Image 1 (cartoon, helix red, strand yellow):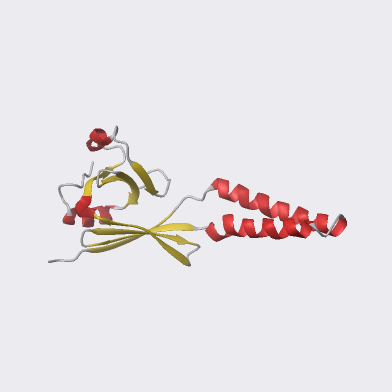
Image 2 (cartoon, helix red, strand yellow):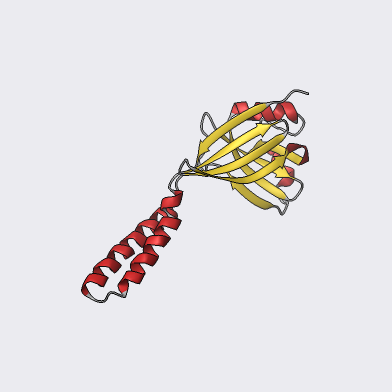
Length: 167
């Protein structure tokens, strides 16, 4: 048995809503400090709450990356926050996958009306030369969105050639 190992690390587009919310909370914390100095010390509670919320919402998730690891018909997806904290998102046994095809492939036409739970592990960016957005239907219940490069797709294709569509 030959083991195929492939790793891919991709960055995700920054979430603008998190950025706006983070800066708004920082602004509210600053206003609370000023209010605490001139109006009442009870505004320090608002400073602490806004500071903690801004840290949790924005500063812990400034840089989000996905790491795909393929090892002998198994695909692992990890989310990495600020290049320091890793969280395992999903593990897929590719023998249970129905199809893996590019996002706009005609091979996915039969699956369009299927009611499936969507898991988005893509970059949210348009296709580039290195990365293309792929859709994988898994166990008949899930639709997985991935951003893969050609090397990763070829590695997966060696394990499950009948289920991987290149166009």
